[in-house]
View 1: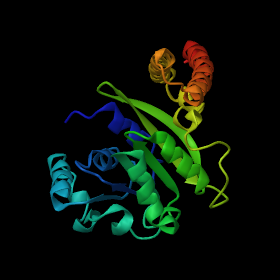
View 2: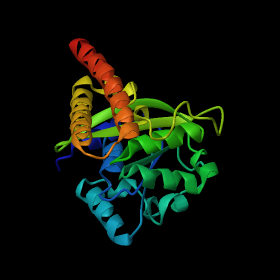
View 3: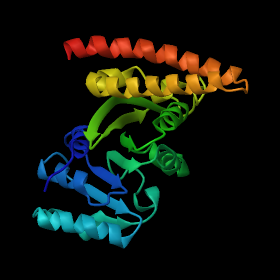
View 4: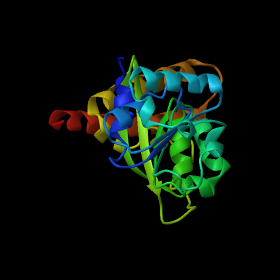
Length: 244
């Protein structure tokens, strides 16, 4: 069974000895790897349908790990409804959109905060997720990047903050939520590729809007501000890559 770098990175971001619940587990690859490595004493796999859970069961059977889990470790349900308050140490929610992950956590914030740690991997809208975490009582502990095919997947680990709510230092649509400083330290090479792709995208937008007949003063101002920020972040990534 060949696993992607994303799967290994997710498992690497779990603290050894912690019990884990994987929400939207699908094939159950991350829980399987955690059990195979002896990293987690218990894993719970949850998904929206019995069909999805059947794939996780098959994974554990193929890997000879089916005797190390019980039927109660496979749960059908939506979001956190299948998990009890504080039932596990860490919660993994990976491969879903940032809005979906945010909604899962927001559906029962008291339950979400009953877990000691979150390992999150949004497919898109990571800025929205980071904004939610900050404003709803979570400190981002670390940032990671992992390749899967042509994509560089973001992995965000978060722990409960002292305050359950706080004012954000900048608006939700600010580019610093999507491209935070911490992403450079995760993997400077992958970060540099992402940053340069975004810089190129902004430059193309600026060219298209500047050549049009309709005035886009406010949009162009934001594009220039975002571009300026990313140029500085690019320089930081280049410097980090020299010592990586």
